[in-house]
Image (cartoon, rainbow, N blue to C red; front, side, top):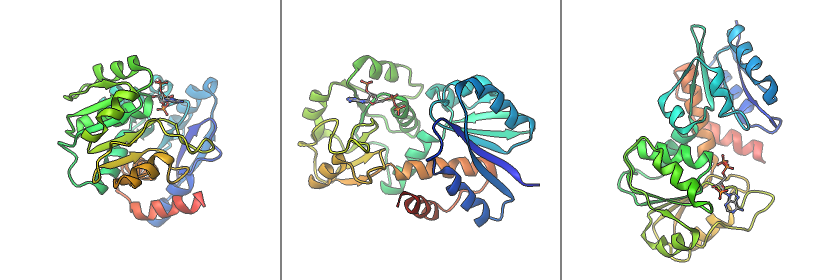
Length: 275
Ligand code: ATR
């Protein structure tokens, strides 16, 4: 019998996950289908219990439910627990287990670009949900020098002090991060600054960035933010947010099926959807 998978969120109409996962199910001859479900906060618990009751294979969770969904699950993976957000749920033997594949997906996508991350002096810009997943996942992967720059310093301090992995971090205001920019080999932009339709703005200047450093922006629309354009002009390597999206999906697919899918195929599929 066909297995049900899906993504719950609100809004959900523009999610690219259904096309991406349905293509993989047919490519790997798996009898399953993945649907988008628009779910309000009021209906979150009933929806999650519904997935469990009908024997679904699992589901993804997106904005605004990544934190609240945790109360509706039977088990939470320790990394997702520390990040405080679940984006992937696996249903097995009548139990729902929550994982976070956003942060690990970002790291996996970055590892495709940079062979060895450990020892790279890193700056993360932002201290929201996305930043936390990336920061904890990088620290778990052994990156142990990660400074954080955020408009609201207290949020960055809280994120650093709650990290369960060994990492040295200095918390910086944007001005101070600009002055230290020449020290970083890896800069990761996690805020919404520069996202369509408000393109052209950047969170801080890359004037002192060294050629040969690497800059990753988790935004993928536009495909090259003003921040990445500035990084290119300084001679840095760059990556946009498409890899993070694809690899979070690949890790979710692997949890559901045991197959780590063809990420080149996934990336081409998503780029076609983006047009
Ligand atoms: P997400 O879960 O997508 O990471 P979030 O939790 O709302 O979203 O976090 C957004 C991040 O972008 C935060 O680091 C936020 O900075 P503050 O902590 O100071 O709010 C940052 N951000 C968003 N808009 C910003 C702006 N106009 N200027 C500076 N920082 C901004």
